[in-house]
Image 1 (cartoon, rainbow, N blue to C red):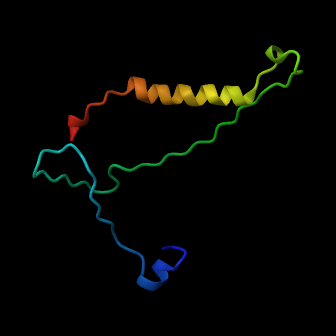
Image 2 (cartoon, rainbow, N blue to C red; image 1 turned 30 degrees about the vertical axis):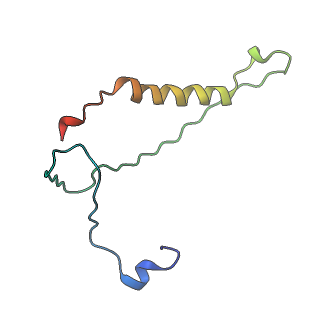
Image 3 (spheres, helix red, strand yellow; image 1 turned 90 degrees about the vertical axis):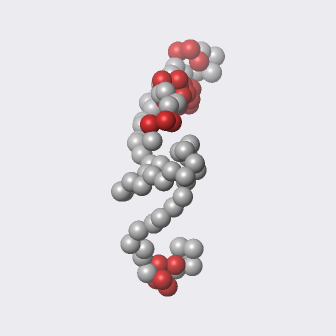
Length: 89
């Protein structure tokens, strides 16, 4: 829609109203100002490795393997440390 010049044709919206599936009790409505149930955070991480000869890979530090371990560690923090209590709404 953006490639089709949506905002040029219809203007920019002042607000967005959306529905999101949640575990609220039947007939309950929750309203919040600003962003809700959506987020985006970015970060840049630089992995620096040390090269080695193919006959002695243990002498180096492979940044691909380091990156994979880092990603798994980050995911584990969230999935194994954060309680899944959705009743806080």
